[in-house]
Image 1 (tube, one colour):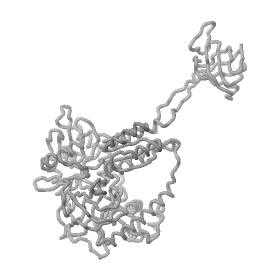
Image 2 (spheres, helix red, strand yellow):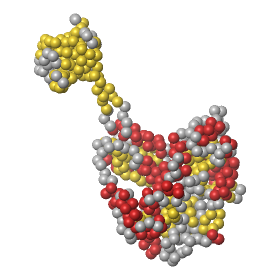
Image 3 (cartoon, one colour):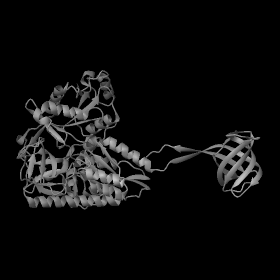
Image 4 (cartoon, helix red, strand yellow):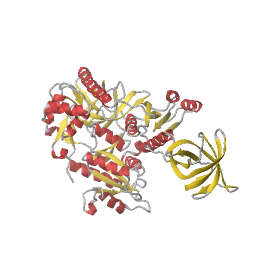
Amino acid sequence: MSQDKTTKKEVIRLPSFMTVRELAERLNLPVTDIISALMKNGVSASVNENIDYETAAVVALDLGFQTKLEESSEKDTEGEKSVASGDLVPRPPIVTVMGHVNHGKTLLLDAIRETNVVASESGGITQHIGAYQVNVGGKMITFLDTPGHEAFAAMRARGASVTDIVVLVVAADDKVQPQTLESIKHAQEASLPIIVAINKIDLPNARPEKIKRELSEHGLVAEDLGGKTICVPVSAKTKEGISELLEMILLVAEMEELKANTKTKACGVVLESHIDKGKGVQATILIKEGTLKLMDNFVVGEQYGKVRTMENFLGERIKKAGPSTPVVISGFSNLPNMGDILRVVSDEQEAKEEAAKIIKARRIKRLSSFKRLPQKEKEYELKIVLKADVGGSLEAIEEELNKIGTEKVGVNLLKAGIGDITESDVLMASLGKGVILGFHNKITPAARKLAKQKNVKIHLYKVIYELVDDVKKMMLDLLPPQIKEISEGRLKVLQIFRAEKTEFILGGKVISGRLIKNSKARVLRGNQVIGEGVILNIKKVDKDVLEIKEGEECGIRFRGNVVLKTEDIMECIREEVLPKSL
């Protein structure tokens, strides 16, 4: 098996934003090589233009380099130097739980939360912030509650590699599913350690050994089979094995020697964003480096702001948060995107300047992408109004919807937003003749009433794959049926008994196959089709029959748009409706 060229080179650390010249210097390549690679990827930028990490990572990969996002900015205007090893302190591991949709991922997360968060708190966490922490013998573990590997992949594509350990959930009463393999692929591409949680061991038909054998075929060989993969049998229902799983997570974290600097300016990743009726725009930030404090100025994506409020995952007000801590903060002007990097800066002026650079870099990228990929009009379009509970879910769904479609049929997103489904959403769907899809949200009573009046269909989902599967079905429904014509047989016209404008009574002999009553028929003269019609009736001697076979003579009553002559060939056609596909 050949080794990918990027694995032969050291990992190059890149900042969130850099000029083309700076990227060339980091990769130790001529600027012309970088500009050429950018142009191949549809980006037109001069040597002093800013590009974001995502663009730089793609270009670097094309040139044979593996990259990683810098944990903290090395471009600070005050000339902040890289972190000294003495400033690094151990930090909690960040864990993502992945796996097939029906294998108990959500139940396992709930079981961990109920077991290790104070009882009075565990049932009271109503807000979906995308992450929470548990205390295991005085040591903290941070769990990411993402919409699945769609969001995981989307965040990695931006360079927002927030996960330290992946827990892969596989049901003991099932088998390794395609989504399980996809989760393994994402974890391996990110070079992350994988712990397998074999769930549902309480069931009578549980076969954990079978699961281990199947996983070994895909590179995850369990320790008891001579490999290095930690496999923990658990039951999310009875909570058996939960403590052992948490201990294994801490063991792997200790081996990984996870550390961060708490003294530097904070840097974090946006996990979720939403609009709170009382507090405005809020976002969940997972702190990667430094300590985030109230009233810190920050830049995130194309916007800047100041930390006005800060809450932990329990909804408690706090004043600061260190590495690996998920916090919900306010102080944004607009909703930040999942995977955007939040960086604390010295003051508002610097925040404005940094945001301006990002806006410029992304504008270059968007314009170049537009030139490179012109939108083709689809013959058929499924028009959708999409609403989700949080920004992370919304973006993950949009990412999946962008993957489906053909030259003939596609998805047209009329509107995408966060929150419950309202009257304005119904009006938008009604005007655009589309459907409304909701994810982890509700329909307001007024919207439900209006949807009934306007005959607008609303579908609610809790699983991304179910939503995507339904969208595919709706797209198929838009396509016209595909008809395949099958030749059943041919008759030679021997005599015309009666001829009217469109109706004929004739005599003939079946020279191949069979002719069927009420079937479509085409008429050939020589090798040329001269018309078509319908076989209305078939008579054999003096009896009406449903069909006539090869070698037999018969009388035919035929209606069609052709003037028949003797020696013409009448071909009987059967139409078969083919199954639709994208």
